[in-house]
Image (cartoon, rainbow over all chains, first blue to last red; front, top):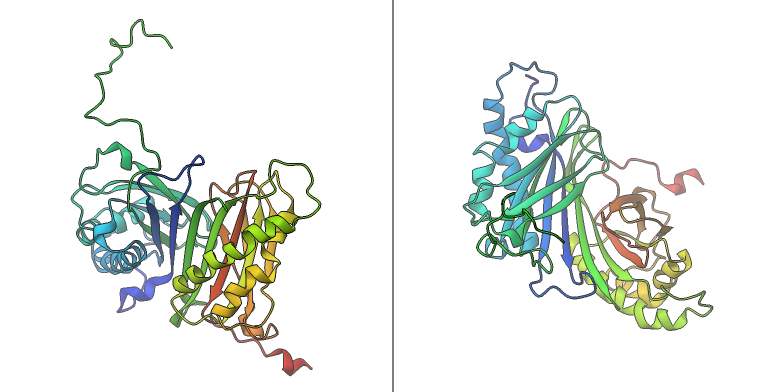
Length: 206
Length: 183
């Protein structure tokens, strides 16, 4: 493994925070206004150049909490604290000298996910997206409800893109949150759905 | 003024050229996606009514937000107008190239210089770079910088994205000789 600094925060090159507040959608103000945000850290990939049998555990446990802390701080200050947050998600964009698995090591273990869930006061599994690409690769990060993942109104995404990241030996790690549902959410829910299968659709016409 | 959404971007650079930047260099952008006041109509000769109706309100909306997002005293600043494909670049320029727009930011930031600007027309998701220069002396070379912005679903053909940008410092690791040294 490459030589690592004593302080994991020294591997963070930059942090980008993005917030979008929707005032009008299709010409009308949403009944339930919401803001969506993503915080992204550009981090040196500690495993870039290592073989596929290398152990990811130690560096992940050392680095992921530092990233989580930096992202959580910006999400909470940008959205108004854990009480305001209703949905969450996460993601990673791995530079081309790394494996998707390296991104997974930073976002899919308790050293990131549990801390994000705890700080945002959620209970759900956190949904995610990952990808590998050059600097400027965009990632659409999914979110769902932080305590009731199947709440359909809260299925939504936020789009993050950093023009100069990830470099080949970097990973962009993203934490995302929303303060409410989609604007004009109106596609029902599991509780209101009628049973649908191929057989119930026999003879149905538009 | 019909504002569809407001986007805030905060960019913090903690390392550049392999060296730490301490404190991290901060640049903030706040953009409003608005309906083009001159959309859906034939060529409008006199833009003054739409300017009167929108420019000052836009400045008042964006200036305090970008200063709050920056969270530090403003040292450099800039602005942008990105027009959707059904509009004229002149429509965007009309909104941002007036004192009634810029003075909100200039006064709140205790600035004196012209706000450097980008005007552009493009599809939703177009990228644009907002130039920033020092707020009281546009020749201060350390503060020449820009920040790239992209809003995935804006501007629609009938919309305009209007944005302000603020930086709390010059470029990270800036080390060019001042202009005066070349005179």
